[in-house]
Amino acid sequence: MRKLLFILLVALFLIACGGAASGEVSETSSSNTSGAVSFKMEAWADNWFAAYLGYTLIVEDSVSITTERSFNAESVTFEADYPLHLNFILKDYKENDTGLEYIGANNQQMGDGGFIMQLTDLSSNSVVAVSDADMACIVVHEAPLDKSCEDEANPVAGTNPCDFVDSGEPDGWQTADFDDSSWTATTIHREIDVSPKDGYDAISWNSAAELIWGPDLETNNTLLCRMTVESP
Image (cartoon, rainbow, N blue to C red):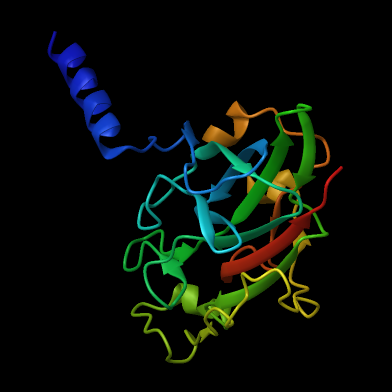
């Protein structure tokens, strides 16, 4: 009886918070956008992402970026018109600008990231966009610049070997006409290297959808990505 009560309380807490537990697929509908076509976006990230239609938020990972080992997926329906200008903020968990997690513990380490997405046009039930090498991505936070920081007894961000780069978000990067020709950090990673789990396995991914991140899964902590989806 106590176990059943505990499970019920946890479920009620999750409902009240409006989010999914790590390892689940959170299904939502966005009222922020409008248009003639209905779409479904499915995405999984290690650890966190936010997706925008231009500047308008479509969905934000329902598990906070401050949560270690959060591996849930998101499924959101929304309305829009072609062409769609989609923007993504991708973040791996880090305790601070050292880029490390579990600082001071025996398992102090660099985290690793990963992201996959597919977009379905619900009028035809066809996948019209996926995460792949054609996305334009840039790394805006990289740390540590020297991986030996991982072995420091007292890692201090900004102090060798724990230096970092945080370039921030470029002005106007979410506009349709922003020049992203220099955004070449998009890198396809093998499933065995990203090791996606939990919510990832709950989605039937299109064969064209790829796991992407920056060139370095461990030190590339925050990325911005863009893509335009033309009418099929």
